Structures are given as C-alpha cells and as structure tokens.
Image 1 (cartoon, helix red, strand yellow):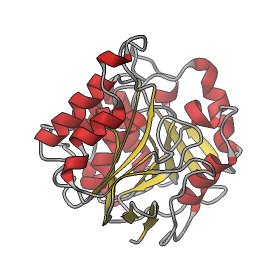
Image 2 (cartoon, one colour):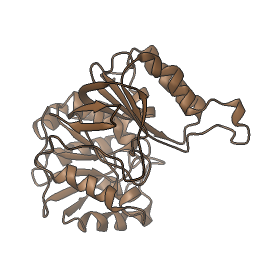
Image 3 (cartoon, one colour):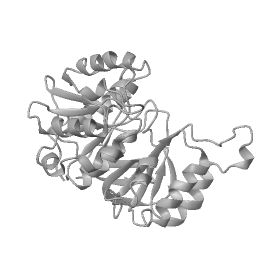
Length: 310
C-alpha cells in the first residue's frame, strides 16, 4: 500500500466537503486554521455550496474530489467536515485516476466511506483525523490533538510510532492477545452502511477500528450484530474501540431498559476470542489522535501497546 508524500509547510491544501454543508460562520475560521499550520489553501466550491443537508449535488461533490486528486498543484486534501453524503458520491469517483495520484487525504466520521474505498480500491494510506470546521476551530483543540495530526500528515517515516492515549486516559483490555494487520475502519455507522455494496469493507486479517456518536445502545447493538452476521467480525485479526460519544441509553431516565455498551461489547465481541482493546482516545472527542488507515500495525492488548510496523 502506498504512503502519500508527506506534507510540508508551504504546500497547498484542497479544502472540500464530500458530505454535509458547511455552516457559513465556520468557513473562514476553518480556512484560517489550516493557513496557521503553514499551508496554502484552495477552497473548493463544496465548502460554500448547499443542497439541503448536502454540500451541493452529488455530481458536484464527486467532481470536486476527482479534481482535487487530478490537480498537480494540490498537495493534500482535507475534508472540512463530515455530516452525511459521502456514500452517495462513490459511484462517480474516478478510482483509476485517484490511484495514480495518491495524496494526503484527511477527515473522519462520514468520511469513513472514502477512507474505505481509497484504501481498498486505490491502495493508499489515508488519515482518520480531526477536521477544520469541527475540531480545528474549537478552543478545546489541544496540543495532543494537534501534535498527533501534524506528525502523521507531515512525517516522512513513522514505523515504530506508538499510539498512546493522553496522560491520565488509560485504555482497557477486553480480550488479551497480540495481533498484526492493516488498520481499517472508522465510524461504525459508515462501516455498516458499506455492507452489501460494491464498496463493502474488507476486514479479513485486519485490525478493525470502530467509533461512533449520537447512537443509542440499541442501535450500536444492531450494527455490531449486522457486522457479526456478515462475517466481518470473525474475519478480523483484532479490534480497537475508540470513543462512543453520547452513545447511551435511548431513555437516560430508564437505563435499566437498555444494555450498557460494556455489556454489548462483552456479548458480541468478546466471544470472538480476538485481541480487543477499548477506550482509545480517537473519534468524536477531544483530545483525539490521528490514525493512518491502511498502515500495518501491531496491537498488544495486555500492555496496551499499538505501533506501526509497516
């Protein structure tokens, strides 16, 4: 799998939205946040476009993704936000052209749909990372989050890099063991939505990372069950679980009518007898680490050690 050329100060970033429309008040602060990192910015039309809840029509969003990869003056592509809509543009992307022009591609949440296809169809590493209009402009965007993002998108060589939570935020072992494989996944809702499509995630022999936001425990149960029934969980080498932000009971006043996430994980994931680590500081949270999807990592769930090995 190709590792895109690392970014450096002075490079040009294409800022796009393949998903939801950008709130007008967040556009210019987002642009400013990327420029403060030392990059030049080309603002895509999708950052200003709106088609209901989408950042313009499907054809516009797909054409802009294609154009940003095709343009030799664009060194990297940052998704300004997530939302919804990335899955709708998958049939319109020029995968042969994109594969021939690998670039740093960063974002998360709904962007998971693009991470999956760029990893699998285009054979290059992408970056599960915070985004300009959602995290970059927040006062809570801390040094840990900035350092992790900058290191990954600007490092020339990261073999051996350990993935460590911020001080005071420990990981938890669900199943003891060691596993090595390519890191795949992202947002659970988007991973599940890929099933039964030409863009279905391949988890065989992989380390599967999952996180989500604003999904009650019953829906988490349903999606994990669907992945299990589809054979996607049995196929993995190991599992790493990130943040589950606002993923509690549907009725917080009656938690006894729900199952806790820990119970769901114990009932669905633990019987797989695959190494499983949870509470990685990554997802819809701050601080958050950046993950290089497609890189080969090794996980030791007993020592809570994860590092890139290829």
